[in-house]
Image 1 (cartoon, rainbow, N blue to C red):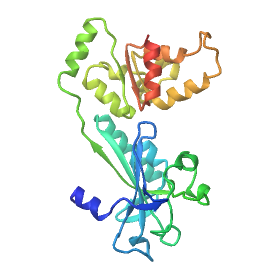
Image 2: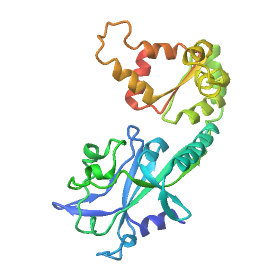
Image 3: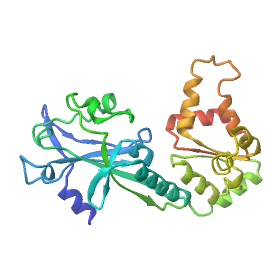
Image 4: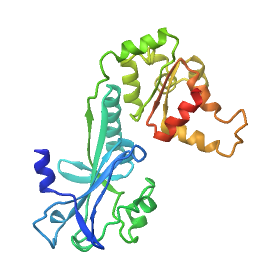
Length: 289
């Protein structure tokens, strides 16, 4: 399929409101880690009577942000329930791609019924979606009655794909030079942990992958304390960083325990932060000062 021709065939849905053209899309940001488009599946039909000629919601982004919003999955062209067995299969594929250093994207859709979301009549409010659709742990029915809302849950997973985005040449040598000069190199990335760890290994930020806390605890089954004591490195998920930071918000700034978790992490010889947001990157930099 030709990309430009396909986008022209299924254009982003638009409507006029108070003399202004509204494009029905949610742009990607590093905070939400997905984007969304509402596309017209048959622009020639102005008053569709069936779902094939109406509108569809398409979502693309980080697997953990997309999979949690899916209750169905596309199998051999048919939408079937996203069972635990199928979910495990998808998660294993995602993990396998990530461990190869591949960046993984998940894709989902929701075919909008023509009777409830008619073209030319329904006004999709893409500017207020965070008020009703941000929480991943809900269903489309929870906000179906809100004016201008549209399904962002109970979606159908179309699939996952991996992208090979190799590190730039000579990065591994640059990391070694920094180490030789006494400079500690910490990796902070938006990639998911398996991808981040694999890339960090390729560029010499992690030289002992089998001695990371994550490997010792998750693969070898050591207790958290044993894994921490024996590890020389750690890969930290941004969600864990957010959780720890939230738990310490009420602590006084002069409390020595405030931020202790972050100092413990960066005390390790080899450190990688994955799935981080811009605000979390600032926290990490501040902790290094």
